[in-house]
Length: 171
Image 1 (cartoon, rainbow, N blue to C red):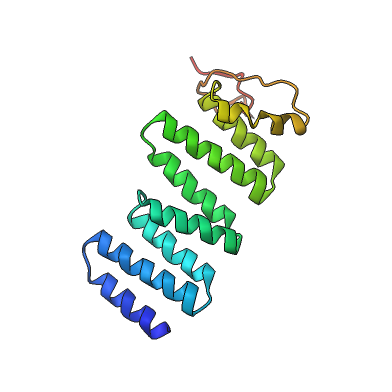
Image 2: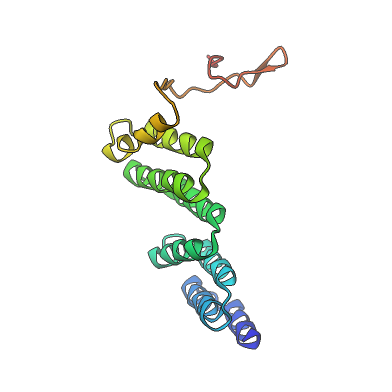
């Protein structure tokens, strides 16, 4: 099977069209997953395809499916972060934020990061019902109030003390 993967890789290097290269990477992923029983290798192939075509819903779905199989949730969150950075409108950013927060909560199981993720989503759209529905998660962590400050640039430091808390805003 490695020989076939090498042939696909060689053919892909000779193709200037990104869509053709994505198709070959998907073939490589299929060989890794089905024939070599290597879901992590298939995951890597789909990550390469995502780098070439981040707008492909098929690639995103395969990465998500393989994250379930491999447990590579940090890599999946990296994909979500790239999608968020490329998102053009607020609704898309909100959806990505919700998905990422749910992943951190249910898959990574990191309460602090989940709290931050839900809070970040809430800041994007405090009136969004999908985010409000998840505020119970914050309550379960013992949160009784949210103080959402306006987004302002902080002074980096003053007299050697870093202004990390949001009170030292620049003029």
